[in-house]
Image 1 (cartoon, helix red, strand yellow):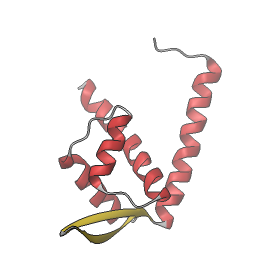
Image 2 (cartoon, rainbow, N blue to C red):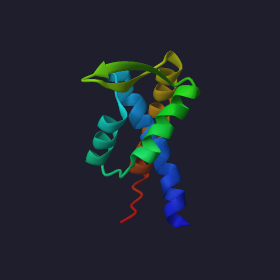
Image 3 (cartoon, rainbow, N blue to C red):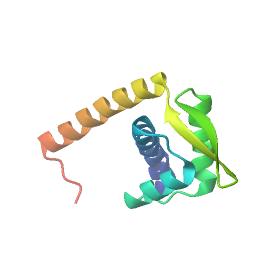
Image 4 (cartoon, rainbow, N blue to C red):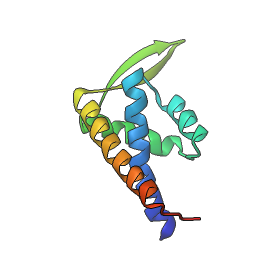
Length: 108
């Protein structure tokens, strides 16, 4: 049960991370998996690709396809809505972390 709840929370963090990078430059699934792994997230292709597709359907990302050495690579960038959501999420995350730091709460 604990892992299911934590996974649900982390998926929100992962979506913010995706929006952040997709705003800076076009991203693709394998690159994003590796980027997330550098931050301690273990995410499989079976999770990232449905997530990217859902974010596209929700209007947060736009997809373009490029032929790279005979393979079609799907690149994603944020939409205006995606950038607005990223901004709001960043503000809320900042407020929360600032409050936790300010009150000196420790979870060690």
